[in-house]
Picture (tube, rainbow, N blue to C red):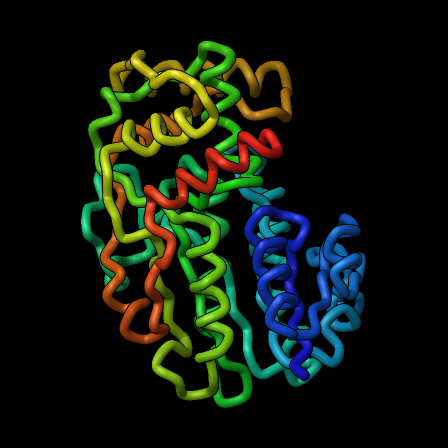
Length: 333
């Protein structure tokens, strides 16, 4: 029985991947700084480890693994470049080194489409798009560097692949879903530019599907080895459609308030300046990067991930919203 290490299993995606692996009978070891009591109750092992800390500790955490799913990352839009570099670049470099030290044969890395989003519209881009992260996003810059390390590490001993799931949402999501709902409840939600730009999100089960397919199909010399793949539902819709669908699932009215893109950008610049001045560590309500993201289209071609990994994106957006509504009704999240 294969031993699969999942980093970042305390997070939304990492936890969902770990549960799916356990459900199909894999041995799972969760590696991160915080405990995962719910996953241990399901049979997972747990190793507490700071992946950006000592190399020896990371090597010990990955000992005996057949494959690694490196999902852990510092996400978000606020923090210093040094913080993002440590959590995303240094940690990834040490995971790669630990894979080599332990003879791990497969490494699946969770990247992000932000590595190719420089600030303008991205409409139907495929994997030939160059890495061009927006310099206003320390997260995107660090993830682009980490993805480069992973893809360059692919060789005859270690097969690697990077996945770029876009805007993951669904029951239990504490980022996109929870923030949309919380801001709507507080009366602070606005649709930048009216929410007309097309986006293509990823329901959580589809993100898990892509990761398990990559794990199973990744071998030395496989078509996917050394490559990166966009992952999404494959259903580009105006931003307001997904936002209002999430609000409806939470039992809230649709968002009817908008803000001009230039006004959102100016507000982000002002708030960033205030946050820096006050030394605050929480995220501002708006940043220049978020304003650009909300004012632009971003959806991607999925031909490659369907061809090389057999990805389908089985849960369509309408079904995902139905499941989200059910979760809100039963558990409140």
